[in-house]
Image 1 (cartoon, one colour):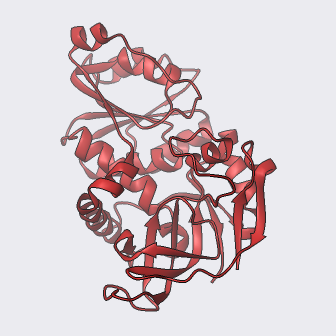
Image 2: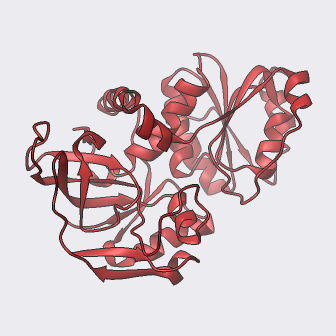
Length: 326
């Protein structure tokens, strides 16, 4: 079978190679899955560059979330049977087939096709844990979402609306503003045009944002500290800007706000029970039409480096999905 390998650290289009590898064989407790679609993620860019918090030995297969169909199961597996539609999230899925632990797979929501479902695990789980587990978002609260037209940002807007929050979205272009509004954002601000802290205070009547979702870092984080509400919560997801901000502890003390970190991979590792609960909730929301991954472009397997490079450029809206095969 074929798989993409990162052969050195650098830009995705320079370091990815399509190679022939042996077909995977499931061991005890494992499942072999035919991959149908892989959603490209910004962590794929960081993995290629050697800048992600997890740094696999070279060469390695990138890709962190997918949708597919079970083709074989190892000894002791009773939960899955060949033909079952599944989704999963872990590093190493940008290949035609993968072997996964049986308990790391989840049933594909019937309401979603494989292209849409490929972006469900990492992006929506990240958004769900950020809003509900870390920030305890409440109905009626103000939610500020940075990079709100990206894959995880659009998911966060949808989940915020579903939770009854009032969503303020921050995007980089007018085209992306239309996407954020389509997901249910009540207000949309343009980065580099609007004075974010001043506009958030104005829109909220001086209250500020109760919860901030920040996958950007840098100036976005600094702006958030200037418009977060009393007892507000800033959830740090990542640093797509490339700038890891610093915060003087006295600022959080004086303004009574909290800064919370969220790395979803730790939940998959340490609290898979919570991941399963979140998946049930997301499946229900998908069935009710409250969430649906926004797909910007679908590219064939052979053009995977192009898909990942698009994320590095920051010009994508929603998800770029790599279609592996039927």
